[in-house]
Length: 74
Image (cartoon, rainbow, N blue to C red; front, top):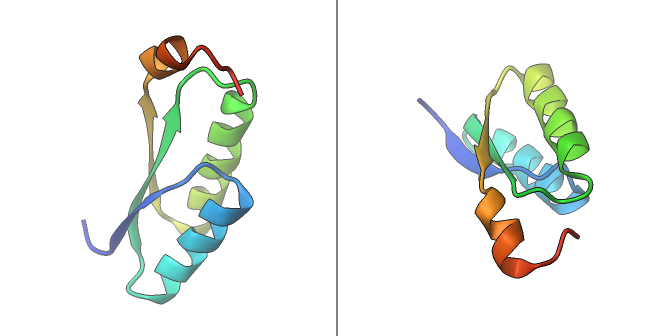
């Protein structure tokens, strides 16, 4: 894998970070963390669409325990 590894939630900050990484050496892969948040499935979908558009490998890390521990579904 060549390029940067980016955490991508599909929110504005992480999308800007993704695009900046694309300009500075490219993105080898992006990871979206799904922990059961209310908008989580939509975030995963939008992050995947962004990665598909730029031809970047997208991975989803399921961490459902995080939502259980925090007690907050955001």
